[in-house]
Amino acid sequence: MRVLLGIPHALLREGLSSVLKRWSEVEIVGVSPSAAEAVRAAERLQPDVLLMSRSGSPAADARAVSAARDAVPGCSVVLVEDVGRSARDHALDVDWCVTPTVGPSGLMKGLWGLCVGRDASRSAGQHPPRPPRALVTGREYEVLRAVCEGFSNKELSRRLGISESTVKNHLSSIYRRTKVSGRTQLVLWAIERGLATSEGRSSRGE
Image 1 (cartoon, rainbow, N blue to C red):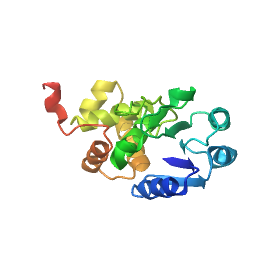
Image 2: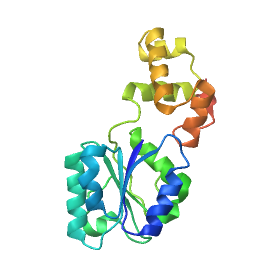
Image 3: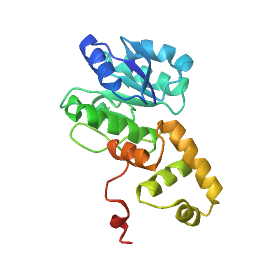
Image 4: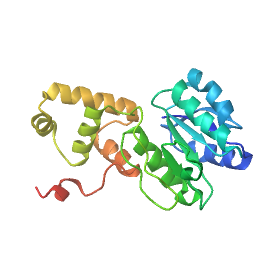
């Protein structure tokens, strides 16, 4: 996941950078003191996510969001907001509005939810994100979920109507994208990011 920061406040900017660096799958492609400056570099940097906060000018913030969508179609725009406020206060067309109350793990789950086309957890000060360019493709996400439910390659083949070799190709792509090796690591990866539960196939009643 490629993340671009456009945060005016140095303490918040450095804190977010520190949190994001905990995850090896996250690449911070740029850090700017404003959303407007970040957007000017977005077309070159091609981020999956733009993390921004308010500049003090609602009009400038709205222009930055619009410019980000024009520069990188599919890039998710996430607004880091003060507690008690929301993007709707000034009708900002962002994909997710998150407050500091969400915490580091909640932030990461929300960002991963954006990148695989799932809704982030809903809690105070947040609005559900819209899916942008995916970390994995739609079919790969089906495979990922089925693996987390305990399906074998043969069962996956029957369930999705594809050959076992195609299943293996999807798995190889998922391992490469998520930087894990093997089903166990993949399931743990998905659980840590809120993309699956530890209940497995028992939850399906089989």
